[in-house]
Image (tube, rainbow, N blue to C red):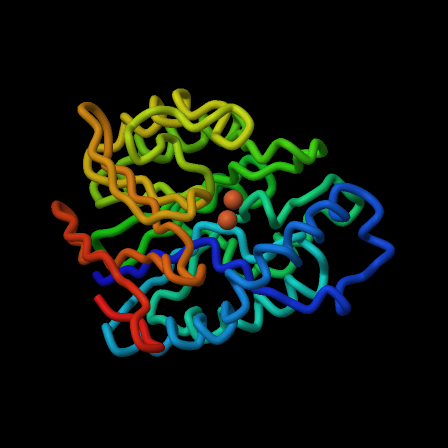
Length: 287
Ligand SMILES: [Fe+2]
Ligand SMILES: [Fe+2]
């Protein structure tokens, strides 16, 4: 089974196209940051997603996993652009699985389930009846005969401008532990997928203003995994981290950020995982 892991694609739309009535809050500062810095880094994001779809086709990718941060400010036009931009990737044989990032639930607002509305077709689990205990989460799917993927949502709105931390709700962690213990899933190789990194590249927890608040509880729940790996985004540098106890951790970085585009290509069997890093060179993605 060949699986492509991408993340933090941050599809850009012109500030002029963003709805100004949604801007009188944390988004004003976010919009300034976006204009000054991010827009340049992610100006070619939609184009690169087309390139990623071509790369996936060339490499025979059968499932695509994206670990969130589709937008900068979580507005309606950004979601519409991002959803259209991943259409090519979603045509893989076993489709596309995903989670939201913190940028996709930017502030608490009436329509804070915007991500789940736009990406609803990618949030259908099929592994076990009753697996979803918190809206669609966890989303658990059995892929072919040898792989299972469980996606948990670690993104939540952060009203403060200085904070971009996340948390996986306890009931999702309980659901995750139960899924990992079920015979249907335990007999397979398992990817556990979320936006936030449980550890930084040097193995330490991320800062409390930026990281996963309950990273230790998440890693504890994942210890029940016999063969598997954790896939995440949020930190815009690709890395892999082996743990003394527990599954290996893979961060895809940002797959579209200028000059540091990251991705992982996995070849998975029931008992083994082989990971190859990818990069963007001369206008195309390569291994
Ligand atoms: Fe990001
Ligand atoms: Fe993020």
